[in-house]
Image (cartoon, rainbow, N blue to C red):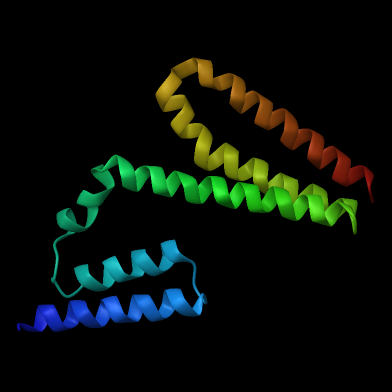
Amino acid sequence: MAWQAWYTLAVVIAVVVVLASERVSAPIAMMTAVAALVAPGVITTSQALSGFSNEAVITIAALYVVAGAVLATIFGVVQLWRSRRRAYRAFEVAVLLDLFLVQPFTLLDSGFAGLTHVFIDLILLASLRYAAHEER
C-alpha cells in the first residue's frame, strides 16, 4: 500500500476514536479529518468539497442545525424551572440558530415570502431580550 492509504486509514481510525470519546462534536471531527486529508495532498480541494453538492449531505447538515435548536429549546424549558433569565437566554440561542443558520436557506428557497419568518424571529428575539432585561 502507498503512504496515502496508510495515512487515510490512520485518519479514519482517529476519527472513530474521537467520535466514540464524544470529546468533540461530529461536524468538527469530520471537517478536521477532511482538512487532514487535504493538507498533505491525499485528496484535492475539489474532491473534499464535492460531497457538499450532494443533497443528502446538505440535509444532514440542516438536521444538525435543527437538532441544535431543539436542544437549546429543551434546555430553555428545563431552565424555566430554575431561572427565567437563563431560560430566556437558552430560547434566544434557539432563535439565533434559526435566524442565522436556517432562514438564509428559506430565503433562497422561497424568496421574499421567507421574510415573514425572519421578521417573526426578530420579533421573538426582541421579546426575549426585553423579558430577560425585565427579570433583572
